[in-house]
Each structure stands twice: as C-alpha cells, then as structure tokens.
Image (spheres, one colour):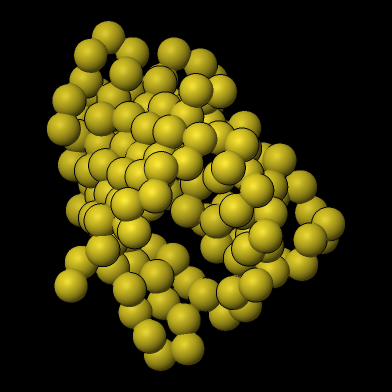
Length: 131
C-alpha cells in the first residue's frame, strides 16, 4: 500500500473516531466539531444513505445538530480498499458499523480524499446502507 493510501485509510479511521466523539459529547465540551471540519475540502459533497445530497455547510449544520444526541453509539470501520489513486487523490471504499443500544447498522461508503495537504481532505462521500 502506498503512503497516500495509508494516509487515506488513517483518515477514515480518525474521522470516524471524531464522529463517535461528537455523537457522544455535549456541545462545547471540546473542539471535536472544529477538528472534524478541518478534514473536509471546501468543495465537499456527500450523498447520504437516504439519497440526500449535502455540501460542507449542510453537513456542518447536521453534525452540530447531532452533537451529543447519540450517547452510547460506537463506530468501527473495516474492509478499507483503495479503488484508485490519481496523483495525490485517493478513492477508498470501506465498511462502517454503527452500534447503539443493541442495534447495529452497516454502511458501505466510498470516499474521495485529496492527500496533497498534511491532513487528507475529504472531497466526496457516498454512503449506502447494507440490508
């Protein structure tokens, strides 16, 4: 695996650790949201599992609303697979497992990361629920 591929995989893991922390901690308890947002390219786009398209501002609004609202949620990622690497851009697919109160939800996600900066910046994310 190339160094850029390793950076992309590491970014997936760290970002989901931040999401877990945001879901579990009350607003203002730390700088998790600001750190979370630093992982995204200004032109970021996302397609949610429900098919809704979000830009960076809409995603920020959503995560600020969700902060502290899913206490007890745990998130794990696995099956990280590099789909392509073009210059300093990596496309990675991974499986995400969200666990809360005995209920598990799995998603397969595809992300495009710009690895030209010290912290890879997410340009695109599409999530699909696994039945």
